[in-house]
Image (cartoon, rainbow, N blue to C red; front, side, top):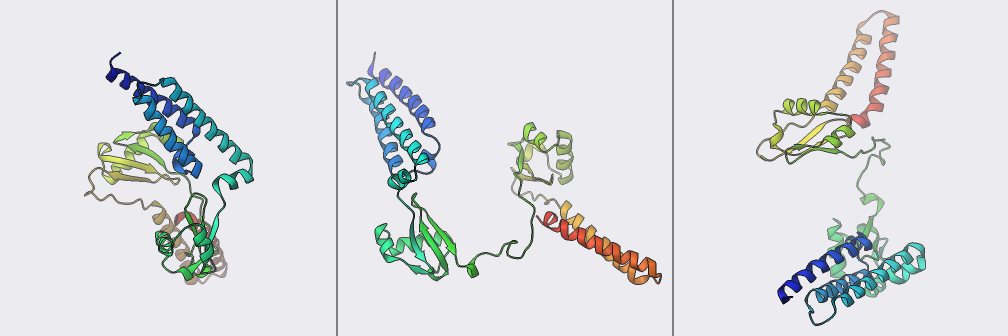
Length: 286
């Protein structure tokens, strides 16, 4: 067999085996590399190159070595899943770098992190003052997690005692100008509804790059032509405005009538409408 053909076949074989072994190791090997996984990734890559190009050696020996590396990696991951001590030994523990707005210099030296690098990581978290940080922790992955002091945390509905509706996953019903029937049926809709919504905003299907439907059955589209402005759905805002108008009308009727029974009825209805609006507000302002 000619050398170029053998190299080609070995390369394709190495790619196939490498793909299968990587699938076996799992996604964590790519997204969150521990120290050992980093070494494993480099070693497997080198072995794959060896299998592809070293024509003087037996190619199957490289595959055996690849298999051993993957088995060890899978075994260590299994140990990490089963043992807290195993995780601490292999990945190490999280380290507190800032506590109560004070930098812990000894821990900084332990992690071989300079003050400039620490400040850089804080800026990436939109934090520019060390005094604003309650806790900053270096995770085993090397990322730095930051908890701001209570007075510097962003204001949320929970701080105001407001309950908001749960977030539901939007369904992508149009992609690259093509309708996706399965996501559309997931939210209980069909192509006729979609065609009606597109007609309302004056957009043709073939000009839609991405179209998504939220939990409230409102369609949001991104067009190929970015110069065209698409109006945002206003159904929830219109409904909220209508409910507020009904409340105001009931209060007005109660003030304008001279009939005592009618006045009490309108006031009671206005109060009930106010309660309905209070319950519906988190949904309509979502």
